[in-house]
Amino acid sequence: MDQAQNSKSKRIPPLSIRLTAGERALLEQRAGCLSLAGYIKSVVFAEDAARYRSRRQVPEMDAKLLAELLAHLGASRMASNLNQIAKHLNQGTLIVDPDLDSDLKAAATDVAWIRSTLLQALGAKS
Image 1 (cartoon, helix red, strand yellow):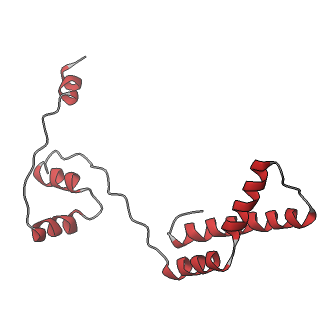
Image 2: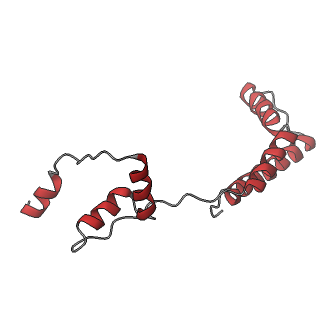
Image 3: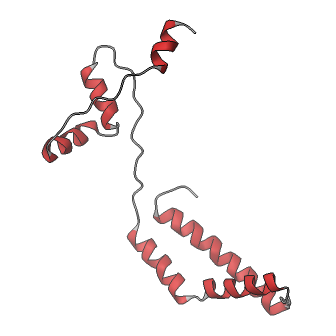
């Protein structure tokens, strides 16, 4: 193992500083999309600063879509119905007739809609 690898694996303990709430808020504002550690390193070691990883962006939530999703869940008895189906499956007493088949297909459609709506409301790609 060469010297560079050896020094990288034996890092010294982290440095700790105390900040006021205002100082911390100012640092976070100035850091933008960088982590605080990345921002501080880029300022302190500006001449030979490496590119530090960005802070993960928090997705913007669509409150209207989330409310619609919650309303849909509240209006349906899907969770209870799926629980009853699972109970009968585990007991071996489930009889699949045309009504149950259509109910299962409807439940699968509802779950797919809930998933895509939730992802959309959270700003994620589906």
